[in-house]
Image (cartoon, rainbow, N blue to C red; front, side):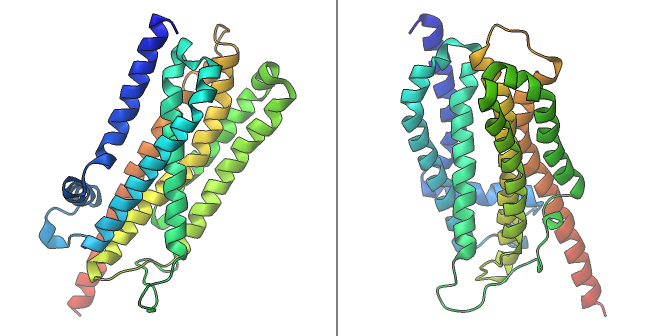
Length: 287
């Protein structure tokens, strides 16, 4: 491995470490940090307005820690493949370990969230839900759901001929899989929001809805992320010196931006939904 490859490996490792560090903090530091992060994201100004209970924050902490550790295991398992691929000798290679970690982390988190949604309460009482029946539009606006579904479809249509020229017949299942992953992510998110949630305290209803909005945002982003990666990475590794079409330049930025933008949009939606709910409660109280 040459000097340039060593620098790429070092930078990629640092990139991954900085991304994962917040979720590897000890519990005594991580739990207050999660509460502050949630208050800021949900628009709650002070703890007196209703902090998440310890049970809700602890479940979030354990879910984050598990998904991060599992993502690291996935990255280590991929190292032999990465070594054979020679990713570190290409400029785009710095994104590949980060992409593997991000996809693994998102996928494992949503699987764990789905498993949590299927479990029953230990005390046998029925589950509670803030928004019943749940709809995706309670967590993400319709315009963003339409956009996040349209972007990978447009990218795959534009890239279809180009990727086939690079990969031959094997490009068809790869690109078709990107479309299937996008549709599956939206369908799974629609299922998840219909599942009732556990609440031990009244404030848990809001914070469970906040947790779910973040999981839904990540879930609907995962499929498009994979679809855009299927379009971009074959070109970068199979023909790194070839000309890059105009439509291919924004794909890496879109792929990495979509999960973050989904989180921001979901937080804004959460604030709007609960602002309306709060106003309705005030009206009912004055009747």
